[in-house]
Every structure is written in structure tokens, then in C-alpha cells.
Amino acid sequence: MWMLNDNFDNIVESNWVAPMEGSEIQVFWAKLKRFKICLKKWNREFFGDIFAGLRKIEEEMQIQEKIVQNDDTPSNREKLARLKSTNLQFLAKEAAFWEQRTGMEWVKNGDRSTSQFMNYVKKKRKKSKIHGIQVGDQWIEDKKDLSDFVVEHFKSLLATDASSTS
Image (cartoon, rainbow, N blue to C red; front, side, top):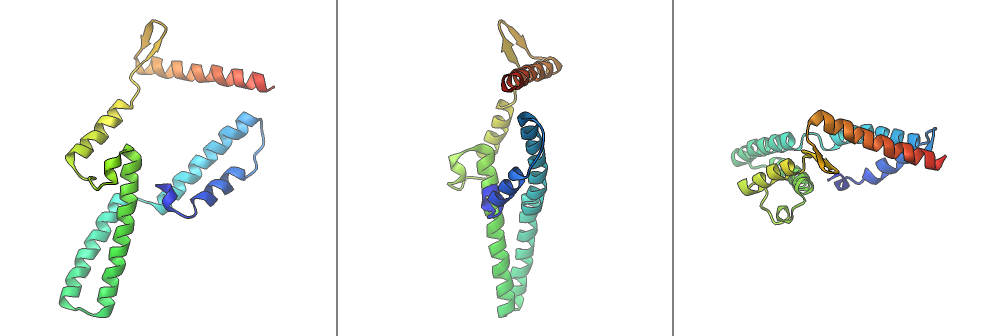
């Protein structure tokens, strides 16, 4: 979805190449953290709330269509054409959002608003959640134990990685 913006590559590059100090892993994590903050801010500025924007544009289009019906002047038709163009841009953003969210082909084929599609989104979200991890013969399913295990696992990986780069 972010690829719809021409400035995306420049934002990524300028943020990533900015210098930082520390060990390689510290620099990497600091850049990721800085990059996340930058992308969140940029995402709010460029995309905002796609669905609220789409509703607002559609309401404005309905009002402008009534105005054109009552007063069909070139300036009123031009304003309606601009609103329709903006509406198409929002629809493209919405389609990109759903395509990215679901990774499904049928979004490209126009079946965005079906109940089948929405059910698929809910099932995919539920299915992608991690409910447990098997370690040897034992399952870890408690949220706290699962969280502790994952943190310790990655700490050990990072400790191994840090000692091998020294």
C-alpha cells in the first residue's frame, strides 16, 4: 500500500542511511526503532484513516451531485469531477489495504465487500495468532510462559550473535 506513494523510496533511504553510533546490532535495532516511528508518522500523514476519508468524499460527492442537478454550471461539474477523481484515489488505497491485509487474489477481481471476504479476513486473523509452542515433548500455551520463552529464546540468539561478531 505504501508503494502507492512516490516518496516512499526516498523516505526509506533517507531514514536508513542517517548515521548512528554503537555496535552493529545496536545500530540495527536503533535504526529499526527510528524507522518505525518515521513510518507511523508518514502513514498517518499520507493515508490517514482511509475508511473515514472515503466516507467523507462519498458524502461530498452526493452533495455536489445534487448541486449539479440544480445548477449545472461548468464550475460545479468541474468540482464534481475533482471529487470523483479523489474518490477513485481513496478506492485504490482501500483496495491496496485489503489486498495487503489478506494476500488474496479476489480483491483484484472486485469482490471486496462480500461477507465471504470479511469472514476470510476474520479467520485469517484468528489463524495467524500463536496459541502455543511445542518445546520437545511439552507444549507451552500459557500467555505469560509463552512470552517468557520467546524473549529468552531471542536473548540467547542475540547473545550468541553478539559473541560471534566480537
